[in-house]
Image (cartoon, rainbow, N blue to C red; front, side):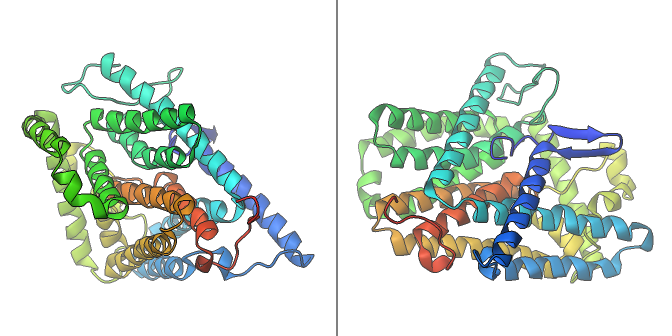
Length: 412
């Protein structure tokens, strides 16, 4: 599941049924976990409680906001909106938060998962380098993009789909680097982290760049906050400042190209459409999953762009569909996750073997959330699997987060 998590276009299909492989694997694994947990519960070998469901009260608030917004859905579209609440809204929480939180019950399983994702990240980084050197098709701007595999594009074709993977996997590589004692492997992990960060820049994804900047700032603030003066007074900082001047010029040139201006205008029109729909029902929204169909009814957008796109950024998805109520619920869920991770880090920062793990998870969560402020993967594994892994790591490192701590202290 971890290896396939970004491949949303790699699907299992039969007749009119199609589902991404990662979702199908997650569903089978989830059903298996539920059956096993119920059996152990009935045998009095394991208790099932709300401790198995982190942030459940915030998720319940979010699903409740979706249910209330059904009041504004037309009867012909009611079943589609109900289905949208179940999948993807409830689905992402059960499959990519609850599942990893419960089945990863040892440090060994956690680090095995991170190693699998590290291999995935290096492979995608090499793909990005190849596509940058040998563009698969004519583009006005040369950049790293996903490539086809035997004629299929399992990752999609957009450069952003490549960048959003690296903002999660690069911190995972740093976790492995901080933990590893073997010098050779340590260098491999560090090289992999730099490789992913470099290809992220080569995608020319503005969301990817912003996520990387936020991650660097958080890293400086949490790990090196006592060394700010030393870092910024060093020769390296002056050299970096000198390099930023031509980089700023390149960014300006990039931002004024026809491709980027066109994409920016499209996003501005999407925001305008989202805010127009939000004003119709500001408190509870127009209903789950109604943004695309509502946008289809806006002739001015269809005439200019041909077909509707999904809302870019979770704010402009939740505001028109779930209103202020649903948007606050979604934000509360994310804020709680950040609060738990930061509080856990502050309580264990004197234990490097734990602190580095949680710090890397914080960087990954910051990266994916910042990216989805501008992206369209807000209900997918790309956002929520890194969050699920982060919460799973927290239960080992900070026992007060949950009473369900399942690991052998002698081994770890």
